Amino acid sequence: MILVRKLDDETFEVSVRAGSVTTTHRVTLRAADRVHLAGMETDAERLVEESFRFLLDREPNTSILGRFDLPVIGHYFPEYTGEMRRRFGIR
Image (cartoon, rainbow, N blue to C red; front, side, top):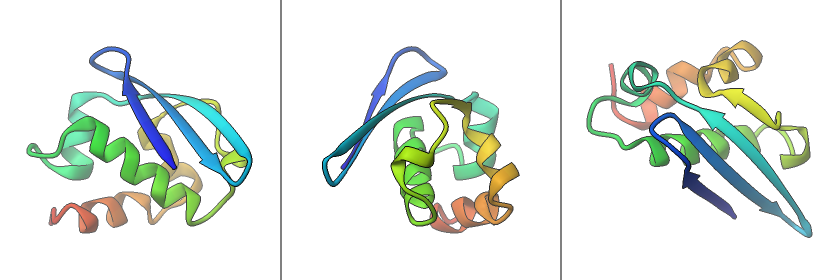
């Protein structure tokens, strides 16, 4: 289960429960990065949630950084940007 809570225009708190373990993460997402990754029509909360689904397909919630800028995912998983653009129908 993934719960995304908007703290301000660029900051989100994400709680992830996997089995009996719940982790909490603080993520920042700038508007320009949101548009680049998912397009103008996608809201930030949806992009953050989908990004965590992407991460959870590759690692357990306990391995996800506690604080990070969302585009940093691409440094660890080079396919991230292309995959998000594909999921959101961006060319």
